[in-house]
Structures are given as structure tokens and as C-alpha cells.
Image (cartoon, rainbow, N blue to C red):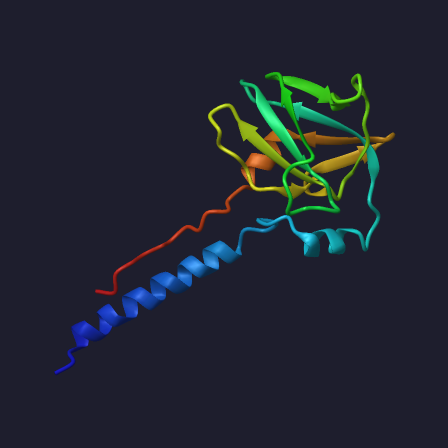
Length: 155
């Protein structure tokens, strides 16, 4: 005979799975892909030099992803000193100025190898006088790509 207690146990798994699914879906911009780039390009894309404020106590690496190839490997990576503001230069071309669109993808990589998700630069930037400014701390704060399962028992 199927008891009331067994029916409560049957409810437990679907509820946990559903809540876990909702938690995963709530992470905005968790994937930097062609659909996001297309949506960004329907509005104004700012182009300028990229200035990063590394407000962390240690060095971090910033990886950038070209908006025409968002799912491929990064376009380039820059190691930023701790507690510094750095305008990125083209290290492949005698440190010449380099320009980016704010529809490009950006990712922060910490010294221990922990990586944020890749997000559009525009999510974190301000644009003024040809400079796109990004606070590195803002990138990590929103990076919640791993689902959070909330489980509870129905007693």
C-alpha cells in the first residue's frame, strides 16, 4: 500500500530538481554567445581603449573574447598588477594602443586559476572620452554560474 509518508518522499526529488533549475536559470549573462552579441549590436556599441581597475590585492588576468567569435578561445589575455588601473595595450605590436567594442566578452582569472564567467564588457563598463572603463571587482561579484540547489524536507 502506498502511504502518505511515501508520497511526501516522491515530492522531494522533483521539488529539489525544480528549485535547482530555477537557480541555474537566474544567472544573467552566464554564457557569452552569438545571441547575446546580436542583441547588444541592436543598440550602440561603444568603441575605445579599455581601462581596467584591478581593485584586488593580487594580480589578475583579464581575458577578452572577440564579439565575432564569442565561443572560440580568447582573443588575448593581460596580466594586471594588484591595486592598479591599466589601459590595455597591444602586446603583440610594440604596446601600441588597442581598441575594443563594449560588445566583446570579458573574463577575470585569479592567480589560483579560478575564472569568472564570460560577460559582455558593456555589462560592467562606462564610456567617456573614448575610454571604456571596467572595475574588475564587478565581474566576479555577478559570476554565479554554478547552480545552487536548495533542498528541504517535507515533514
